[in-house]
Image (cartoon, rainbow, N blue to C red; front, side):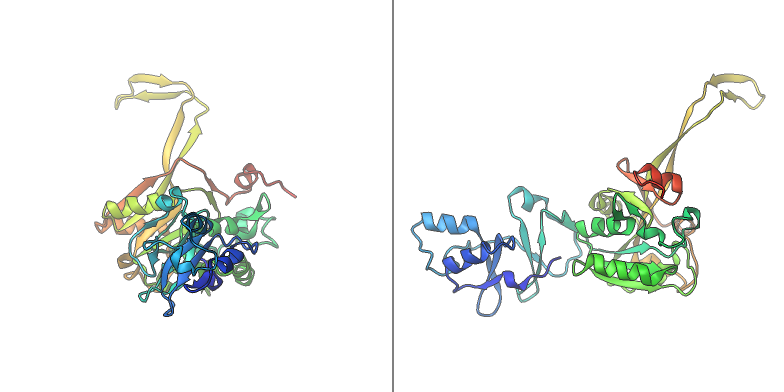
Length: 344
């Protein structure tokens, strides 16, 4: 969410003054018109002013006469997924976010944000990146760059593009560097919360230290490159009434030999020449309901695969969400270089 109070203008402001604001070069193509009580009563675009002029209104008239009685907005707090695709399709770029008194508290840009997901996010960024040495001797693994952009920067941008505004980072190794980078990169686009692990807590231990009011928490590793549609993942898990979700991707490998298939008495049934094997594997992206997190031992080391297995064994429904789009685990040098980065 973006907070730009300068976009709010009083209803008595003239159309000429409003038009001048739109042309100041700040890309202020949508203004939010407010009453004396600071309630947003409408939005104003260049098109609204032009239509008003065609209806014989004057640029000296107050902007209240140019706006429509109805306008698109979303409320401050919501437990539902708010999609912006319909707004974008109608050419509506800025969607104001209003509090209970209908006052402006920010807005979303539909050209930069797909939706507002009602989840918190936890990025696991505390590892030492031993497998990536010597690249990680001076630079933490999440800050290694792909085509000039740090891995963590890509992940943060991806979360913000889905309207996730509460982002936790579990840190341990080189925590100060990662925290400083994250704050500078995100600026005011999201609220960052840092979990400083005094000892490594694995890929799930940081969950127990999160403080969040959201019902769902998205958890992902900090060494991933992906374009996963997070809203589709969220909807799949929630609609299935599962307690958790895990993203899967397909991993294939070629067997360099002919594979023999036989029965229990070793009678040959068939032979397959150098087959390709395909597996559905854990992509390192999870969605966890707070009821599961509340039962975790606080501050104790735990790993997500073990927790997923434990929850499944206890009868909790776990939804698997297959993803066939971009996904790269950048935890090994060969994978890191395969996406375009070159060794130095």
